Length: 513
Image 1 (tube, rainbow, N blue to C red):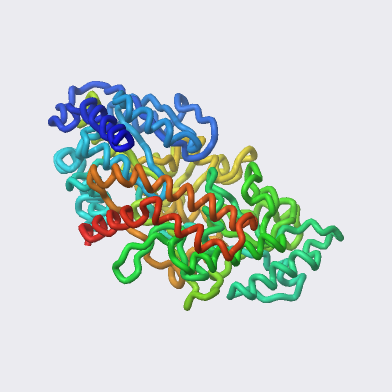
Image 2: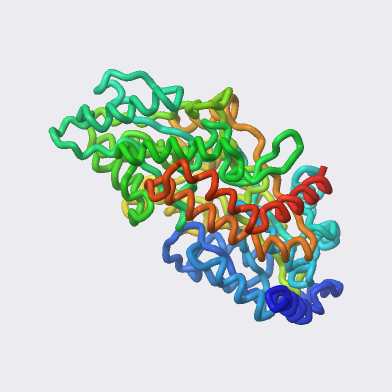
C-alpha cells in the first residue's frame, strides 16, 4: 500500500498547489509585462540573453520583458519535476521530454498547473488560431485527455530529420558498392576495417560510428532496428499498440549489432566516448559510416574538404535485413516533440503572454526567431532572407550553434521557415532529405494523451521498463549477455508491468482514432 500511497499524496499536493490554475485568464493590464521564462537550451552553449537584438525587437513589438532561464538538456527533466512538485512555476515554461513530447505538460495542465489555451487563442491570437486550431492534425496532436490544449508547439517545415551516410571515397578505395542490405553493410564495414581506406598505413579506421543523445546510446544506433522490422519504442501493428523491444525481431536487431561490435565494426567506445564523435572521428579521417542529422552531417563535406582530399560523405538508403523494404520511422513531425511552451497558472498576464506567442507566428515575429535581425544575421535578396557570414561562416562555431547563440531556432513555440531549412542544408543534405521523404519515411507512432490515473501508472512503470530495456540492450551490444539468454531477459518486461502499460497506450490510441 505504501508504494501506491506516495504517488497519490504527491498528486494531491500538486493538485492543491495548482488549485487556481483553471480560473479565467486575467485581462491584460497594458504597459510592459515582465515574464519569467524557463526554457530548455537548443544547444549546450552559453547565451547572453540580455544582448539579443531579435528578442529585443520581439519585446518592443509585444510590450513584454522576458527574463530567460535556459536549462541544459542534461538536467531538464530533473529541474522540471522539481518545479512541478514545488508548485512555484515561472510564468512561461518551454519544456519537452524527447519521444514523449509534451505529455507531462498535458498531465500537469489537467491538474491546473498550466492554462488551457483555446479561448485565449480564439480571442487574442489569430496567427496561432490559423496554425493550430484550424489545422485538425495539429490540434488533435496537442489535445490533452480533458480535451484542452496546454502547449504552443514548434512546427517544422520538413519532416526528414536523420538518415544514413557513408564515405563514398572509402567505398571507392576498397572497391565496394553502396550497401543496400545488412549483409552487404557487414562486408563493407569489414573492408573499411581491414583494407586501410584512409591510406595512412595504420589500422586506425572505425568502420561505423554513432552519436548518443545524452545517455541514450540507441538514439542513432537504434535506426538499424528498422532493417529487421523492429522498433526501439512504441509501434502500431494493424491498429494494435506494441512495445517494440518486446517483439521477437528486436532480438534479431540486437544479435546483428552485437556481431558488429564483437568484430570491431562499430565504435568500441559508443557507450562512453565524450564530446562529438561524429565531427571528431570524421575530422580525423577515421570513420566510414554513420546515422545522424542530414544537414549538419552533410555540411562536413564543406568543412573537411580542405583537410581530407577527396572526402565524400553521402547518404544511402536504410539497409534491409529481414524486413521486406527499406524504411525508417525517424522523422520530425509537423508538431515537433522537442520544442514548445506553455503558460503557467500563476502567469500575471495571460493575454499579453498569448499575444507575444502569437506575434512569433506572425510574418514579422517569425522572421525574428528564424533569421534574426536584418543586415546583421540576414539580408534580403529577391525578397527572401539570406543568412550573413555571421551565421554561415562563423569562425568559432557551426551553423546551428551560431543561430542559437544569436537567439534563433530556440526550443519554443514557433513555425520553422522553409527558407531556414534550405539554407541550413547544403545540396547533399537537400538531396538526402528529399530521397528519404519520397521513398523511406513511414508514419511514426502518434503522440498520445493520458488521463491522470493512466499517467500515474505510466510514471510508475514505464520509466523502469525503458531503463531496463536500455540497460539490457547495451549489455547485449557489448556481448555481456549471451544471445541465447535474451528471450528470457526480455520476458522480464511483463513482470515489470508492460502488459498494463500497453493496455493504457492502446486505450489512449483508440480514443484518438
